[in-house]
Length: 300
Image 1 (cartoon, one colour):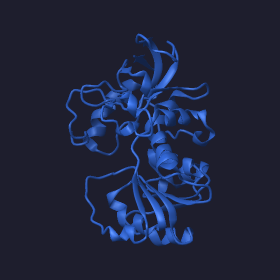
Image 2: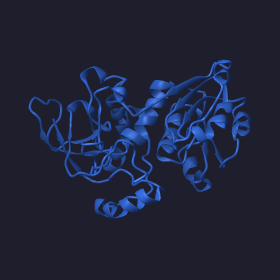
Image 3: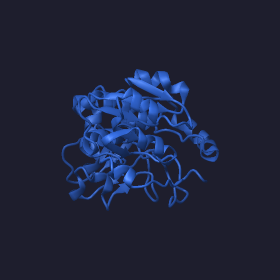
Image 4: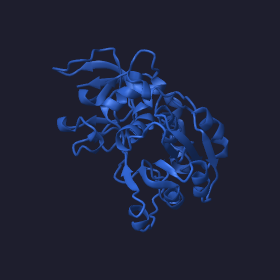
């Protein structure tokens, strides 16, 4: 089971992205009602002190779909009231089911960590993936000139529809010279969804005083680099993990900057996922996405 992360023991119920309907409330819960549609921040619990921008790093956080915790592929699950957000009218379950991870992580990176500003240039690596294609939309909404990088030529049209101003589609090549040419000397911000395999071209794509936000790491490999390559050019290396409840609410449209279109490659009944899961895990090609269906939730 090489595709499962370290520390996960079988059997377990996967699924860290969840949207569904409240069927019961715990004693003393206020602000929500049975029958209301909600989504989670990928966690079922955080401590009260972490309901801020540091929620994803809470020492008490309980991650959905982890060891001993039911994930979104269960019919029912429990979550604290502090980790759920209302799904507004007009927002589909398909959007809500990916709001926390695929959309919310990019929102956290762009809005909270790097604070992308109007008129800046931004590069999104891995722009054809779930994190990347939504980060493109969010960067455009922030008013940036967006250069998207992908290793999949077949995804270029979709990335352009997401709003990218330029798309670089190539695998295993140093794209930094093209980025510097198209951004007048380098980009102000990189949202990095790839990690080690592209560290050097990504670093060389940044302008002096650039901000480099690590969001994803696609492989287990390590990469050497000289810290002087960053500090002599005043480049900041930052990180973004997951999303907060406030940001999750934004992805549902509570604020205009987060009104993005949820990108989907397929929609399948849960029963068909049960048949396909072993093949996905054994092949290592891709994992099944979040369940896009009406999941019932216990909140308490």
